[in-house]
Length: 408
Picture (spheres, rainbow, N blue to C red):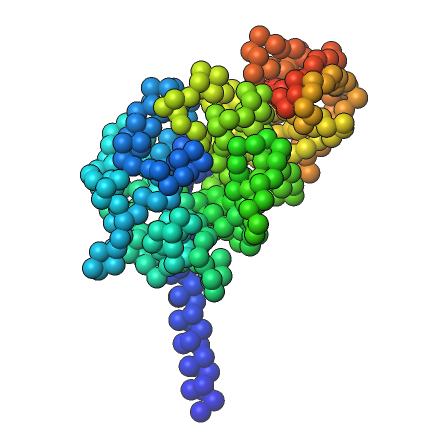
């Protein structure tokens, strides 16, 4: 009897092990650098249709955004129609009369990738059908349509545990067989950085952003946050980010009503954070100033650096912050953020500074090492670290430099 019990236990243990081994994984080769693209929500909310998405894909190419590295065209909430008799989700026939498959094909024809949105709950945040109970059917439909990116929200999720809900959709995506970037959007409420690496390719670290540089929008039971507030919420998270698994401080508000200096700071700091660069403006009608910010290849290169290390705050004094970000090939990025509304004088005595990154164990001792620096917003401005840096920074603006080891 004892032998039979032991044998049964071994069988059960073996079955459990097989179940664990059979668990699907996310598609590992995706998002090796932070995803770049566009999403409809920040500017358009629920006012989406196929004409908007097609025109956005067109302008992503003609504006130079595609050439700068943007590749995903993502529809957010409210594209949904009803489920059919078999439970499969359909697009709203009035807004998307050609269907999602035809729309994805159009986006793909432009050399771009196509993204879509759903929610782990009964309904989406906009009140449309959620994926709860339909995860595998929805993933099959997305694969059939040619979806390359799924943003998965967290509204109407009463009774669900976040980690388990997102595991379920990961399993569904993997079983559907089409590689998709999986964007976890539960607003950082359940500390996804601690568990989401094997599940998704990026995870939101905060509540929603809105188009204000230094504000909180109190909705009563939750808040939307300005750029600086979200930046401050990234403290102590950098160790969780890297190739294929990124902290996501939310989509960008560049071009949505802030000043040019604030947009420049927003873009600079998201690059320093190695954040996904998902534009949220109407790129069909953006100003030339906005276009130049979004397509600054030198700043984008900092975000997309192959080392995949998130930057860190080095110092903060009188509302001026200095940040550093280790880059490949022994290079560094440096940003100087003026949080003040007014202009400030800034001086950096390189030879007195020692920069240590505990995460990568890299150190700069400027008194012993010489770097050449290039201003990434004013390309004609350059110098080296043997000479003190003295300059002025406009209110809410940011200086950004790339530091390269000097050859002599």
